[in-house]
Figure 1 (cartoon, rainbow, N blue to C red):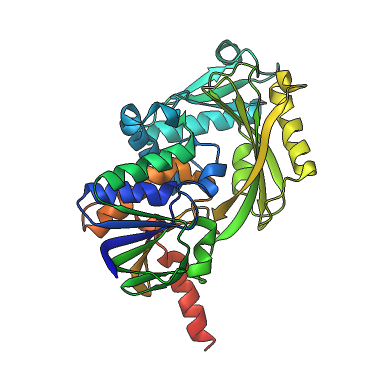
Figure 2: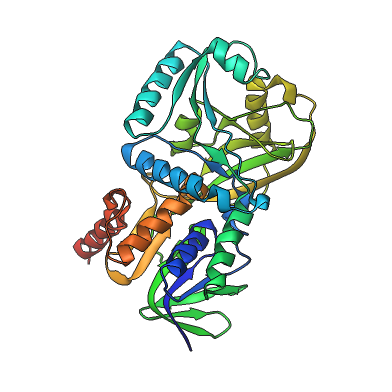
Length: 379
């Protein structure tokens, strides 16, 4: 039986980032992944590194994480395709322009650079946009990257410090002090971290994580030239809604000269097939903002399953009734953005150090204590 200070279950970008941080702290780490590093939901994501202000806790974690990514950027391999393109939040009317002003205040209060663009400045920044937009909020510190290779980079850095990577190794059970693999191997662990995304409830059924399916499309080269990540303000409504399928315009420039287009959300849907009706809605929405897309061919279309919690915030911290089990899951569509901050937050807590941001909003106990109380009342 191999023994480690920490066994991390799930080799997506969150688990890989945590392996990197813990190995840097001198801990012996095993990173266990059922398939390949970064090959699950991480490989399906857009790769945006974006500060989001839907609520103060979300802004704290995303802002902290984007800043950590920025610190790391100079050391990332070129293949990770880190692009400090910034984000433009697009306003289609006066009401949305007023929301832009509110967002700008939120960002600035959190120490994040943000500037309001009027329509003239917007079209100077992005001439390919459809006419009629009234302005935008520019957040220059945001970026995009290629998620699978970012996850692989973290994992390889951890391995260079002695961490063990176990790929193609599905986990059968988690118990205090050990992780049992489906091949019969058992890993002894001082602590266990569950970072398996939508698969986490299979190993810990009480977790309030459900899938949210999303469609993405990448174009061939020759797409309209876009300089920023472009997001309509209506994205915020669709991103955090809980009922029904929704679509919103989101476009990313890629260093290859392609465009990555999103986004759709289907709460509770766990199928992986591409759905023509959803894709058509998504593309029609995109063409309202980028008319140059009409007639452009898609190189690839795919779907992914985001692991969502009821309040849209991840589960970061110890399980309240299983203190040997730490949770790092439920990031929904922000796992790429918040991988760095989530890893640092968990590492600091494990090592008994002060955290850079308050950890309480992400505590698993906010759901699991309630579930345990309800079970006791009905026992």
